[in-house]
Image (cartoon, rainbow, N blue to C red; front, side, top):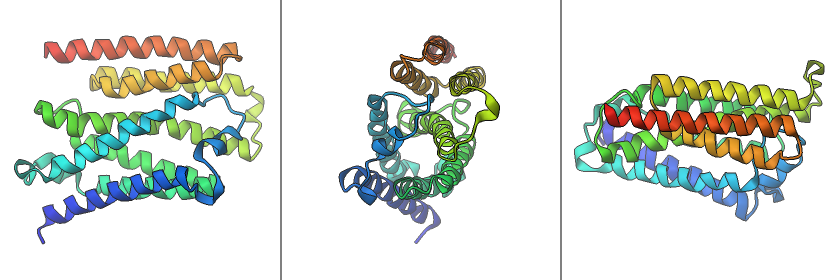
Length: 251
């Protein structure tokens, strides 16, 4: 078996594993708990409305598109995919492991797996050189955009996961109100959006931030500081996404 075929099979099996565990997490559900129900236990402010989690459907489609694309005859020797190696396959394992930790109330361990997942996606993004490498429209939709969307969502999910864990251990936030911390985290996420727009012109990543910020604003409508911060961040993300699209088309 060639190295390329082994890598392709590992990626496909990773997609199958991650999707299966994600489906079982909600349908069984794992440990008798639904993913969203666990999240609702934590009275934190960096959490979007429930409908926002529908983005997982988009992520699943991206995974499948990538898995199929890599098997195409013309992609057997694709240097970008070869350079990616087994990072994508590893991300699927981390994703599944996080779900088990979350559903079995191992919140500290879930943070470690979430950070591992985030790190793997960042390395994948850099290995693929998303936003800086000229690719065909098909490769952009099957590789670049799926990784941008996935990284964008896991960026937001990591902050939410850490926030929930800190709540679970009754961290007092150095005396700073939880609403203020949420506004700070929204500002930090917005800064990441600015960096992505300036360095990568990555509209996919930015639209995920936009989707998430609107969801936070809707969910936290009763907290003016958080909601207003989220709406302001939404406007910024939308502007940066449009800016990125215009610059990319001109190029």
